[in-house]
Length: 112
Length: 113
Image (cartoon, rainbow over all chains, first blue to last red; front, side):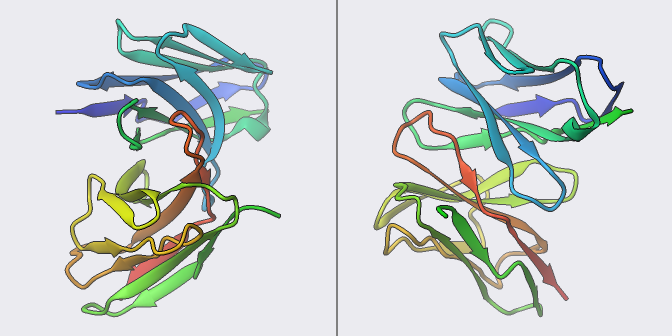
């Protein structure tokens, strides 16, 4: 069956370190992958898009990689700050439907 | 300001009652989506619509219904057939571009008493 898996346990790191979040998928052939940030009680906010033919994308302190052989995306936040504390969701989409399917999210806690 | 408006933010209903959640967007987006989120879980797709007067079932459509009579509006009805309706409901929209980002509303929290 199709599955998207993110780290189920919360990630706790010290301010200034790099946070790395994982998104694995099975039985999908995504054309692209997106990452979102969600704060408690709020709707998710889009962060980054990466297409299947792209290996890496960067935006300020954020970096995302996409390995279609490993069926995995990694999301990195460098020089993390307490304000980065939130839940991060990955979502995958295909080219022939409008569906966007989300993982369960990973909660990141950055301690000062 | 352009955006997505969901209402009500909080809703309580008794078992056996239908309830309709409103979702309006003024972003001129073609596609609209409804997701459900349970505590500690990700978003699960209920229904989506890529164009007016057309919509498709997502992964958990049973017990829900939608309509898309206007581009700006995509209301979701939670029927009495939905066995466990207490959840946080999120509406989103995006442009017709197939890799486009989703713009989410602030959500509606439904509690069945």
